[in-house]
Length: 199
Ligand SMILES: Cc1cc2nc3c(=O)[nH]c(=O)nc-3n(C[C@H](O)[C@H](O)[C@H](O)COP(=O)(O)O)c2cc1C
Image (cartoon, rainbow, N blue to C red):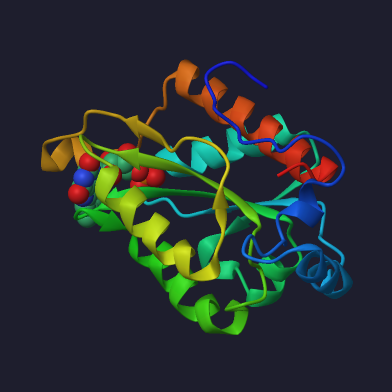
């Protein structure tokens, strides 16, 4: 596990099988769920939206950290098939007016029902770029993916760039190296976990 993250890694090769077990059931239900198991894709998808460059830089840093083991897709290009083809997700966007930025919300709106019940148990994590808050967007995203039964596997990252005036908010952003490094480490850890099927 990389420093700075609490990544929920379930030990061993049975992790994927365990995640499908109905905790109320006994051996019978374990067998029933195991029989229904399908192939879990092994690539991370990094889904991003950005208005002034911060979330984009963070998503690209995460992609760099993943070192070829992740797909980087702009939110307005994402299709349900892209999400279905990924074994886990890193969502990266700014907070706008206390919520997810519009194109990221639109991505969820357009993909939500086509994927309902089809990606349960897959891993996700988030990076929110913000001026001074970020918790509203993170909480909204968490609520949305609860419907998909996604599983958060790393603490939410909020990168506050201290943009408070209209001028600062609308200016192109320069993300500090430490935040880019944090995103790169998160991308590396997530991509590895998804590839190994340990989430
Ligand atoms: C329309 C708009 C609304 C914003 N609302 C918030 C907000 O509610 N909370 C916050 O912390 N920052 C807010 N910001 C600031 C951005 O989240 C911040 O500048 C972020 O770093 C931008 O990321 P980006 O460069 O990827 O677009 C807002 C910015 C814009 C343009």
